[in-house]
Length: 301
DNA sequence: CACTTGACCTGTCCGC
DNA sequence: TGCGGACAGGTCAAGT
Image 1: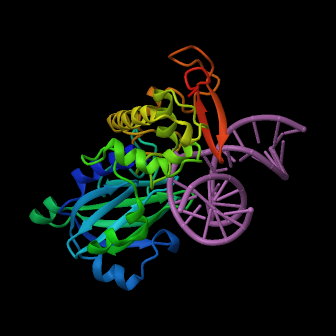
Image 2: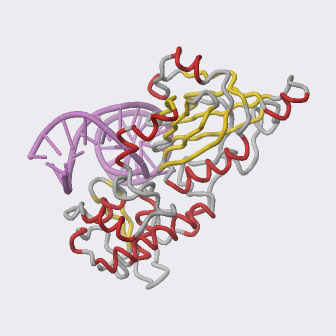
Image 3: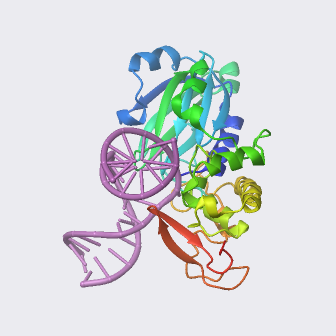
């Protein structure tokens, strides 16, 4: 799925598009994708105005004028694609840089119909847009929740600090990861309670940059190297955002475009290829069921 | 508690 | 070309 850089890329895109737009309707045919009661949707989503877009870990948060917010988790194959209704790029054809052939399509789970702010002000007739939540594997979800209750959600309370936030310290990271003393360091790193937003791609990349073998137990990784790891997690995530995220198969941004981070990846999906640092061959193994890529020469500790 | 595995879904790819 | 199995970026619940 979309990890932190992919979700952040979508957040940045939607922040340019959605604020001040009015939600006219929401339609969905896979209840698990949007489990709220229709009554709640009618009362607190339909007719509301979008105020701002936040992100916590891999969750997008769309704040509404009604005091409710939409929480969206894309899990493995979720997409959030915005289209203005008269946009001729969509429908019959599509731009070369888009992965989306048509909208809606067989993976579309929720459609949000919007009234655009600028047009609504002047003419009011044609200012429409749609936001499509697509999710091939149906693991993702959208939930409508009172804004004040977001921080009280159990999974939110348990999340580790934002790696790119101002307040994360080396000591916070070390304390949290040390609680997973007997875990493989790779598994601890993708645990959202340790640090929020790191997933399989950026974990493998951060571990390569730090010279740490993914199957090392946390208790056997030195404090010095854990500090180095936190620094590399930040660098890797920043580059991920700069490159618009990683598109392996599915991921697109809010305009349906791919991200280019994988062109810069050192180990992820590079098994059988030479390591750019030492020339040894990168290998792929399974660690607790997760595909894991690393360089056996650079990552011994 | 900490840790691992299987389940949630659908599509694709690979070997026979 | 068909068929079965493994695999895919993420979490949960349930098991040890």
